[in-house]
Amino acid sequence: MKVLGSGCKRCHELHENVLTAVKNASLDCNVEYVNDLQKIMEAGVMSMPALMVNGKVASCGKVLSPAEVEQALYNADNAAGTGGCCCGK
Image 1 (cartoon, rainbow, N blue to C red):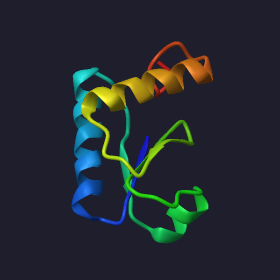
Image 2 (image 1 turned 180 degrees about the horizontal axis):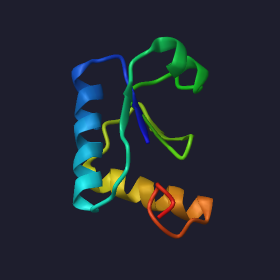
Image 3 (image 1 turned 90 degrees about the vertical axis):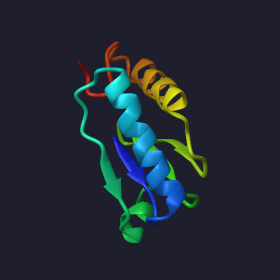
Image 4 (image 1 turned 120 degrees about the vertical axis):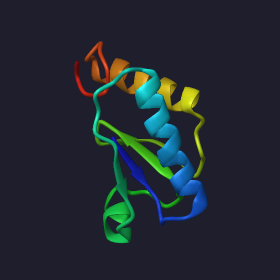
């Protein structure tokens, strides 16, 4: 899972909300904060902050609440067919 952002307050807020969601859901997932603009552009993200789950953009341009992050993880799992958490467990 990755949070993509420029380092602004909103980007850090999304990162904190993702960490909270992972903790609340008792997931053992790595959450990476990416602020390298080249990598962000390579991901196709034009609006920050952004959340990537399983290598796909799940949200961009919005600070998701922890509950919204949990929903994004659930949606990504169902789309991937893993039936578990975003880590495939």
